[in-house]
Each structure stands twice: as structure tokens, then as C-alpha cells.
Image (tube, rainbow, N blue to C red; front, side, top):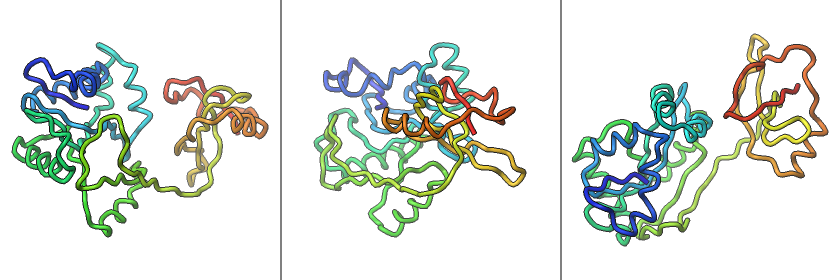
Length: 242
């Protein structure tokens, strides 16, 4: 949530919204909210970091632990954007409004105030053809689509919408792991480029203990120098393989 309050917020806003707005890890979002949003406004959305033409979730994770001067430096290196998809407060509580009405009010506010980066208006459509086109954006880090009923009110703390995730089967080399080779937490995956260099392409979700044990039996230390030696992944200790 991003909240711009002109006076002490209501108890409901205190409980549901103000915590993320005050998060010290993202000073540029706080500054933008104070500069661009009208007083007594609450938005629901997500923080994202864009790097080299794709969404970089690992950079977002790294920034979560930064504070003070470190957070300010990270804001320069990996600036965040706030992708807002709902307007839940504007002078009054709008959570009882149907989504279609809240969306129209949010689009009107975005245009009226001329909001700019780091605020981004999350795209929305009722056109199935356009939604299918969006599903092809996986190379940019888009995982899928969220579906909301146009007549539904906003229900804080309840996931009443549906999420459709794109799943693609492919092959990759396990180049390294977070944790240790004996008890891997996640798998860091790579592919060889035309020059024969192993390039990092992504990582797995956190492995269950059973999956970690099964994978550990297939892992081995590298023979000779590893191409990722000295790299840092998400602030976790890395064990190399392949």
C-alpha cells in the first residue's frame, strides 16, 4: 500500500496500509507519494525493480534489507516503481465500491494529477485478445494475469481474485545453489551462450526438504574454475556445482 495522509489516518488505514508506505527501504517511493499524490489517498499495488529490460525480483529482495544511506544508494542503483492497481481511499473509504468504479476513479486521478514515475498505472482490460497478448510478455518477467470481478468490493487481507500463471517447460544447467550442495535451498540456473559461456538465466522456488535431498544426490563440485566465482546472488551463500 501507498498512503498519502494529510492528518492522522483512520484506524483502518493504520492497520492495513501505512506500514508499507513508511517502509524505509524505498525512500524514492515515499518522496514521490508526498510530492505527487493528493492528501488522504490510499493505493494498492506492488513494488517492482526494472533491470536490463526485465523485472528483477532479486534486486527487490536485496533492497528490502537496506536502511538509511544504504537504502538511498540502492534507490540510485536499482530504482523501484510502484505499480498501482487499485484506489482504496481518497478522502473517504472506497473499499465498498465495486472494482469497476474504483478503477475508473483511479484512472481519472492518474490523469488529473499527471502522475509520473515511480508511479505506474497497472494495465487492465476486459478484452480476452489483449489479455492473451500480455501472457506473451514472460521474457520481461511477467508471470501471468490477475482476474478481478468488476462488481466486487475491496476485501483487505482476503485474496478474492484469481491468478493465472504462465508455465513454460524448458531445460537449464544447475550452475550453483543457495545454501550448500548437501542441503540446497534454491537452484541457480544457467544456459550456455554461443561463445560457450554459462550465463545465469533464473532460479527455482525454495525447495522442500525432500526435493533438496533428491537434488543433492545429483550435485557435484565444479572441476576447475567456475564461471560464476565471485558472483553474489540475492545476499545468500552460494555453493557452486556443474
